Image 1: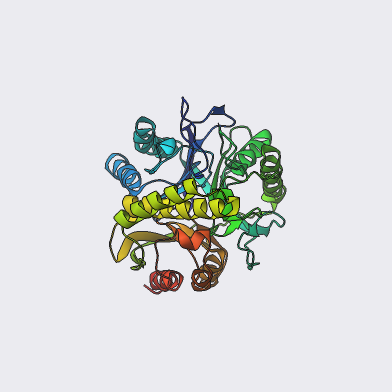
Image 2: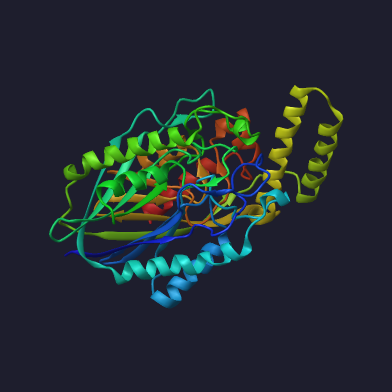
Length: 424
């Protein structure tokens, strides 16, 4: 049998200045657009049906994801939906922050669910008979583990290609593990970051091709800088558009070189498993009221000290407190666990595993080891719950740990629940 495959792209770039997400150090709205932001959809219809949507955004709040899925189910009769974000820090703010300098544009955010439904609708309308093929290749020299005592990385670039029955390329689905944060807090232009340069390089060769990009287990993977320094807004000379272009074009060049070597699979199959999961929260975290008090105390301490080193330490602790306040206010509350979901999909032998947050690379690699054959970890998918560090990282501290809402056993618990999906 053959699949019916459809792809579509929709521009979701804000039409006016907007506060950008991801960096507490930014204190003013965007000043323009460097490159557009898109919502892209891949629709696959066979024994089952599935839509994968990739958004050039930092993350999406759960209520927008739920609303989008409801629209897709009600209007398009489609229930298996994966909505993932690339995690660019040069896109619009999507969640409520304490600081007014990071306000959400409610009108723009409120239009996203309809845009997501429309891009899936367009993908379905474009469907035609086709086949899929995949390959994973190594791309070295990009991702680094940003925790100084760790060397664990995942340099696999996953490529899933769709072709029509005559062998013409219909679209691409890419998966790579590295924070989309080449650009730092000094950037005030809207941008998809390095994935944007992947798209443009591929479109130089295939002008109308739709390319979806998803990030992997990138919780502790970037291009080689401290998460603490980045949060503080430290300027780094290699975090530029020139470097983002270099990285994006390097990945795109590998994709273009490998396309003809990726065989399509004649035995087309699509298996989908979805599991509701419970993720244990850290019961020792301060309450939201306590965090507010701590934030105010830090403010006074920062104001009263002239010691630059002490001031920097206090500012960092205040950022930790604000991040926790946001995550507890928007998602975690004062509960003992978070409910979320994971998908485990097998497409023509390729495994896709969705993770609803920023999972550490070591955990992602362990998840991959549970499967036979190639596996893509799709992070920032169908929810955004927080950082998911390793148990050893919880003992060491640092930005990812100090801003995570989870208990130290979260990685082990996540692995157990993925195993449950496989076994069931």
